[in-house]
Amino acid sequence: MALMTGEQYLDSIKKMKTKVYIRGEQVKDITSHPEIRPTLNAIALSYDLALDPENESTYTCNSHLTGEKINMFTHVHHSQDDLVRRVQQMKNLTPRHGGCVGARCVGSDAINAIYAISFDMDKKLNTNYHERVKKWLKYIQENDLAVSGMVTDAKGDRRLKPGQQADPDCYVHVVKETKDGIIVRGAKAHQSGALHAHENLILPTEAISPEDKAYAV
Image (tube, rainbow, N blue to C red; front, side, top):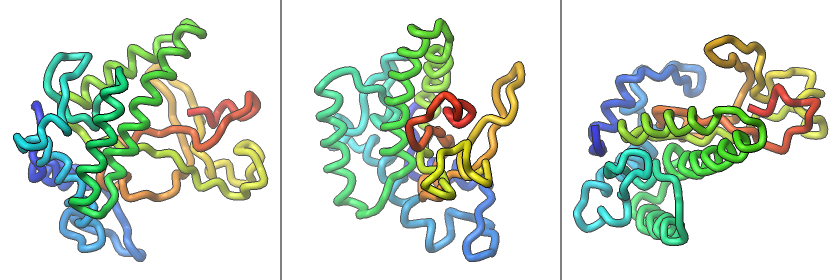
C-alpha cells in the first residue's frame, strides 16, 4: 500500500476493534461515536490532503528508506527544508479541522526522536536498536500507518521518582525480558491519539536515573 485515503484510514481503525470505555460503557464502534469521531475526521483529513494535487508537496515526500512516496507524518527529517515543510504542514492542516492530530503530529516527533537516539545508542553501546527502528519505520511508511506518541505517564505522587511510587504501574516499566523482547506494565495518561492510531510509540515522560532503569522504556 502506498498512501491511504481518509476513508481507508477510518475503515482500518474500525477493523482494529480497539477496546474503549467512555463513562463506564464500552464503545462498540469508535468510528461512529460522537465524542471520538471529530478527531478521527481530523486525522482522516491528513490522509486526504496528501492525495490532493494542490497540497501534495506539503504533505508528502520520498522515503529515505524505500524511495517511495510517503506521508510527511512518517518521515524522518534530514534537512532545514524538511523542518520548514513540517511547520508549513501544521499551518496548513490546523485551520482546516481545529482539532488535534495526536496520532500524527506527536507521533511524527516521537519517530524523529527515537530514530536519532537509537543511532547514538548503537554507536555508544554497540547495540542494534537503530536497525530495529528502521525496520519498524519502513513497515509504518509502507502501510501509511498513524503513530501516536505516548509520552505522559500517570505519575502518581509527583514528589517521588518512578521507582519510589507506592504503585509501580504509575509509570510504564519493564517487568520481564524474553528472547523475543520485553514485557511491560504501567499506565500512560489518556490522550486522543491513543484511540486513533495504528501504533503507539511509548517514550519516557522524564529523565530516568540509573536506579530506575526499568522505567527507561
